[in-house]
Length: 267
Image 1 (cartoon, helix red, strand yellow):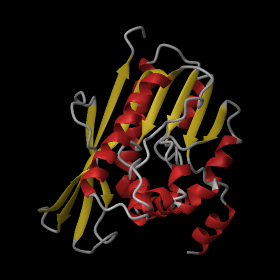
Image 2 (cartoon, rainbow, N blue to C red):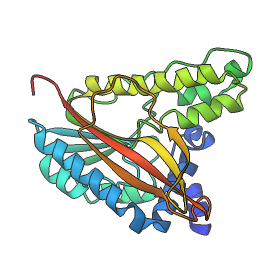
Image 3 (cartoon, rainbow, N blue to C red):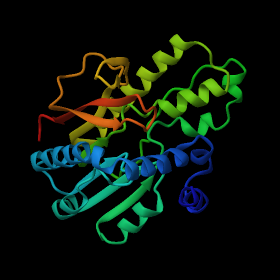
């Protein structure tokens, strides 16, 4: 707890990111990884290998952008910095561990950004509280100086709506159908935005989370990715997300993870 509190006090991030819980969640992910390093190893390894597969298929090797870079646990950073002229790590919060990594690689830079375009508006919930409409996602247009060779959306797509939906509910939003449509809008906006950023797109996300009991029976299943009519994933695997004891001694949660590699016709 002391380490978590010290990180919370010392980490640099935008005030609205802290207010909406992004810093707290980044620290929580770090601590969950520390508890379940062995259980997560297979998933993290699959992510790194999948990203390298996408990088090897990328024709240009000037710019690589990682959206949702986090603690770099699932990023093959050493290999990517050797392959590309510049690596841009994009997240709403960069913990001190990530900032220290940057100092070891001359061709790596950090970009602190809200890729949904929702956070600044949700930090002031008065409009929603007074019956206003849910804001529309608006990914940043000037994030990059030009089109990148490779963009990676890393374990991010399913997570993008979580904090905005919590903030909207806290502000008084009660129409669950409208919130469900908003989730899909946020995810669709991100998926479409990737086409604007790079010639080769690599997307990794959990599609479903399944709670199982001691005998392996399904207790609950939640669809995390609400987009319809997506192409078949390039690869798919299972992530032992929350082993027995993390949430409840009698259940564990596994995630079905999908990865897509998509290239523009000109590449």
